[in-house]
Image (cartoon, rainbow, N blue to C red):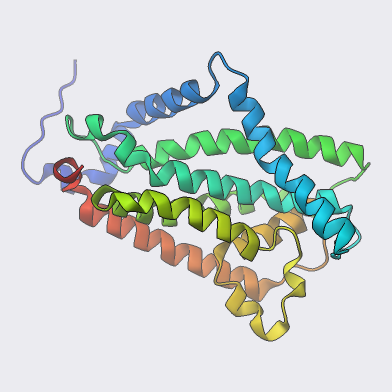
Length: 271
């Protein structure tokens, strides 16, 4: 039986290698969270579908029928749902990652392992919810007899971008949440406001040209535009906006990992 001996400074020198060494713990935590959400219940699966479906109905009635927002020739419910998919993944991931360390305080305070495993495993539940909603998207495509364009092959890239767009801010929030528990109230506020300032119920093309790059500082703008372009083929992709969103996502990810690693050695004492 192999034995891991932790000496002073060793954990820091081998931190990134330990992420792979502790992969079984990552899988165990991810499986535990999935089991809590889905085992012996239909609510978990139903809630994963209802969360994007209910806003879809509201947006379709208010913005599609009453306000007559343009949808670039795509059925408006499909236009909205193509944006709701990445947004719900981002919102769910932000909540799961933001509270992950506090929810695992007993584990963190007792044994050594790279703490980055905890928020990373929390993303798996949101990813599974996303895949479940993907089935609903297939149903909408069939209902409207809509055939995705060739750009659909680029969708995995935009899924990865959504993953990192959620991970960076999530690491910042979970780090702050350890020391300042009031930050758990900030996460729902960010999610609620972000839904309406992101191009979910409307296309980002309605934003005046002079403000589009500033608007793209919201990293979900590039993600949502990319999803719509890949799924619905809505016009040409606005590359300057995507580049800005990718840059902001990278900055937030680096800032999140840096802040997390800086505070990590104190998590067990503070939590």
